[in-house]
Every structure is written in C-alpha cells, then in structure tokens.
Image 1 (tube, rainbow, N blue to C red):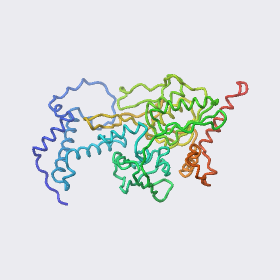
Image 2: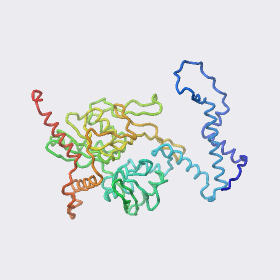
Image 3: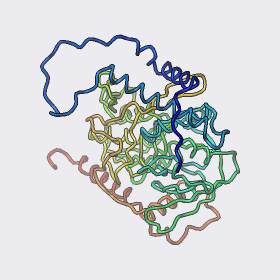
Length: 453
C-alpha cells in the first residue's frame, strides 16, 4: 500500500475549518481569555493517581483538534476519492451526521425532509408499507412487533425476527433511515425480506405486497367469563383513550367486575396516549412515568393521573411479552408499581428512551435521545424491560398459532370460506387462561364477607 505524504493545509481547508468552527461556536470562543479558577474548596478525593479533569480551555482545544481532523478528512475525500459523484459536500456532511448520530444509539438519527415526514406519519395512524415496527437488537435490524392485520402480520412475521436482507440488500451496515426507505413504497408493489428466527435453523423468506397501513387501536372487546372483560390495545395512537373508554362503557353495561388488558405485541406509540390510558385505571394524582435526563435539575415533574374517569374498583391483569414496548411499558410499569394490575407473560422489550427533535435548518433536523423513562418507583425500563409478576413463557411456534386462532375469533367474516387448520384445534392461549384463572380467584375472594376471609 502506498501512502502519499500530507501536504500543508491549503486555503480551501482553512476556510472549511473556519466554517466548522463558526458552526460549533468555537471560532469566537478561542479568542476568549481563560476564566480564572474559583477559590479552593474541600473536595472528596476519588481516583487517586488519575489525571485531573481538563479545564474549559483544554476541552476547547481538544474539540478544535477533532474539528480540524474532520475538515482535513473532508478535503482529502473531495480531492482523491475515486468516484467524484459521491464527494459533494452535502452528501459527505449528511453521511458524517448519519454516522455520528447512529454511533450514539439506535434511536438517534439525522432527519432529512423525507424521513421527518415519515416519522410524523408514523403516529398519525395511516401510512404505506408492510406493517412492522423496526428496532435494533444487539445491533441487528429486528422486528419489534408486526402490526395487526398488515401484510407482515398475515404472512406470519413475529416479534424478534431479525431482518438479514431487504430486496436482496444486506442489512448489516444499514441504518434505520435506509431500512425504512427500502421497506416503504407505493401500494401494490412487492418487497422481499430474508429473516432469521431464534427457533429456526434456516432463514425464512417473506415476499410481501405493500398496502396502505391503517392502524387499529382497540380490538377484541368481549366478556371472557361472566363479569370478566377483555380488551386488547394494538398501538397507542391519538384515538386510543377515547376508543378504550367506549370499550369499557360497553363492558360495564355487561356487569364488568374484572378486566384483562392485552398489550402483547403492542410496539408503543404516543406518550400522551399512554398517560391517558394509565390514568383511567389509577386514582387521581398518582405518578405515571418519570423522566430522567443527563441533568436532573432540568427533569420535569412526573406525569400524574388526571382526567374525569378513574376506574379502580375492579381487579386487573395485563398481558405482556417481548413485543410490548415503549408506551406499553409505561402503562404496564405504572399499573404494576401502584399494585393496580398483575402482569402476566414474559419480560417486555425495553424501549423507553425519549427522542427530541431539534431543527437544524428549514429542511433538516436531529432526532436525539435526551432522556429515559422510568416507572413511578424510579425503576429504569430502557434495555431492561418490565418483568411480569407471573411468568408464562410461550414458544414462537405456539405464539404464531395463538395469533392465527385469535384472528379467526375476532374476525370470523374473513374466514367464512376457510375451515380452521387442524393444528389450531387444541391451541390454548396459556397467558390469557392464567389471567382468567387469577381474576376468577380474586373475584371469589373479594365476594366473601370480612368474617369469611
């Protein structure tokens, strides 16, 4: 390998470095005189023998050196990279921004106009695609949960599936923005995915046709047993709380005395929706979720339960699994901490980071992780998840059959010409059955007079 010697920085480099310094505020800072050190104060001795922390001026010099390194790299790429069509400054700077944000965590991103519009559409309840919520698990592009009734759901994709390729393109070095671009497209167009799954030796192939995705929020409202209701929330959108109140009104007219709230495979959604749902089942004024940032003095007070409706008179069970994420974990954690509901199933996904949008100019922005959500008792959720009170593990194959049987139960009109497969006949939703048994026992216990206890 032959290395060319580094030439002295030219005028173009010096101008670029100056612009970078101005953009970061360092050009003006370097002419500022050093700040005098405060008078000595007693301090606790820690890390004996280590170097003292850098002063403000030293930290500034380190930043200047690294910006100079970036400027030199940009100039060298512009000058010598083999394909000049890839070396325009906008492309290089956007690539640097994408790499920088991606190195922080999987949820921080550089947003161009297209991606920002996609993010806004994600919470509006309708968009085009195949119907999966994406995330990174161990650095690998993965399915957090397929959305109810979408092409991915109908094809049998499951939470935890790892996407190896999209349309033949490996996802190994793919960032979130590029993955979304590959998955979304016009309606009635095809997209192929190669997926690896925990219990499968060989990769699975999914050939899907894109649709306009309409996200249902509250489904499956019914009585499982006299007095024991069931409601499933598939995703937290702007309409979730009013739809939930309607569903509860329907069950209360049927003498609701206990409730199963199913949040399995619910990938989350809007924070406000999670708060509105939680407060329905809590007494007024109780904390729902705590925000923890890098600077505790700037943390807002905990979100607390308000609103006019507080249904606290009946026992509850919440079903969760590894596909329950984000807003689902906020609701589960709040009701668990306040001993309002028993959690049944498996540990949740562990996605509880706060992303804030910071506009950079008229068309670009940063999506930056600025805090993490904790439960009311200050338990961290992110990368940990919410553990169930009663663990009921379900294999991937069993879960897939539960989903098929549930779809037939809730949407019989879609299967009028299709007899149920024989392998679904003996399938029992064990977490749901466990919840039903527990609630039956609680109702019996609560019905006894104090002398009978």
